[in-house]
Amino acid sequence: MSTLSKLRRLVLRDGISIREASNRLGISRNTAKKWLEQPEMVEPRYPKRASGPGILGPFEEVLAQWLKSDSHRNKRERRGTKALFEGLRALGYPGSRGPVYTFALRWRKEQDLAAKGQGYVPMHFDMGEAFQFDWSTEYAFIGGLRRRLDLAHTKLAASRAFVLSAYYNQAHEMLFEAHARAFAVFGGVTKRGIYDNMKTAVDKVGDGKKRTINARFETMTGHYLFDPEFCNRAAGWEKGIVEKNVQDRRRGIWREASERRWNSLEELNAWLQKACVDAWEHLQHPEWVHMTVADVYQDERLRLMPNPRPFDGYIEHPARVSSTSLINFQRNRYSVPCEWVNAMVSVRVYHDHLMVVSPEGEFIRLKRCFERDQTLYDWTHYIALIERKPGALRNGAPFRTMPEPLRQLQDQLLRHSGGDRVMAQVLNAVTLHGLEAVLVAVELALQSGRVSAEHILNVLSRLKEPSRNNEPVHTHLNLSRPSQANVDRYDRLRSQQWSDQEMNDA
Image 1 (cartoon, rainbow, N blue to C red):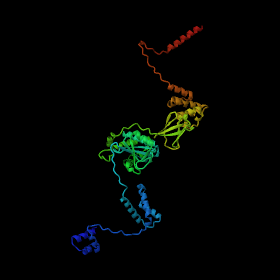
Image 2 (image 1 turned 90 degrees about the vertical axis):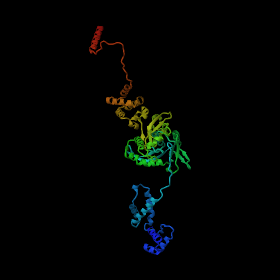
Image 3 (image 1 turned 60 degrees about the vertical axis):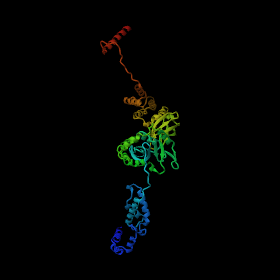
Image 4 (image 1 turned 135 degrees about the horizontal axis):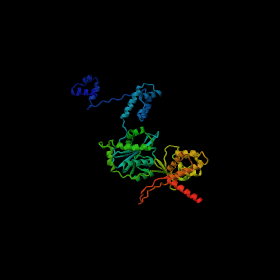
């Protein structure tokens, strides 16, 4: 371009001939004449030289495939050009590393200049109009073990207020609990909820926006009175607000949560809720840059629908009680009262516990276990059976979980003949007087050294006996001289009584 500009000035401005101008600039006269024939100054284009495949030619396809696969990996896991060169040499590449470096540099530049996906339409939501929901997979240390968790993200589309809650899976009961927790923090419900096509909400994806919604999920939406809306297939940008929230919270709140050690999932969720509300105070709103998320949330809260009582989000499963008074649920076994043996019961699954309902309508609450192949006993469920089979106390698996005072009492009683029946009487007292009272009575019996059912039951009766309140008697009489304790008076009465008896005998 510099030579062409000088040529035009020499010929068109200074009036120098084409021959002399071409000699000065060191170019061909025909080339100069061709350039000057153009009505405007246009950058000259030269045809590319046709070159052979070169020594790297047979390996270019393999190298391009390696570079493409590395582009989808984390930056720490990507191979450098030297590693790619060593890999090609292992495949038989005979050349130097120069062509490999040149090809890799050119390929990366082409990828940087290439179009990055499709365009998107910016979206706007009114106050109280919609919230967006999504799941992400994270890891944290709970109870000394590194656990895989599913993190529920619920975010108001207008104010950008968000709530995080962690669970062990994405089952229906977890989904319902995540909504109840988020709506309680927001203090209300929006008119719409935007989701992807998750299996807990959509049974079948039809054409366009046609969806067969899960019956239990639709029951929840009817309880909270919001309309569910589902994105098109592979169109996550339709809920891009919560999609970005997954990335941002992973770098912020969850990074701190993953570095800590938590005793339980409840402790983690309590911390997450507080951390989210605190984050609203300093996060800048993307549309109103002079306001925080908390400031905009105060306006949106006034436009939310009232939050009703939490949805009773359980999933019901039938189960049969085994002959050992156990039910099976998700590869774990739970004990139930022995009176329900061989009966069909209803297991209502909540996010953290199980509610087992008998055919007669009686129910018990069991703590849910998320491990596998575990058996969870409650020894009180077998008390009625022990009355008929006291010999099972010696090796009964459920009774290994009894409190320590009862375990000590059992060890002492089983050393003697008939001790199992005595222990059965003590355990039966739990159903009558309660566990706390029995434990106190057992501890007192162990301290006294007199271990027997009669002694323990006697202590229980004294503990349960209502205390008498000796209220003072009010009278209008007043003593002029208060009575005084005098044991000599008692001795005189005894001696006088003895004298009277001697006289009668005489």
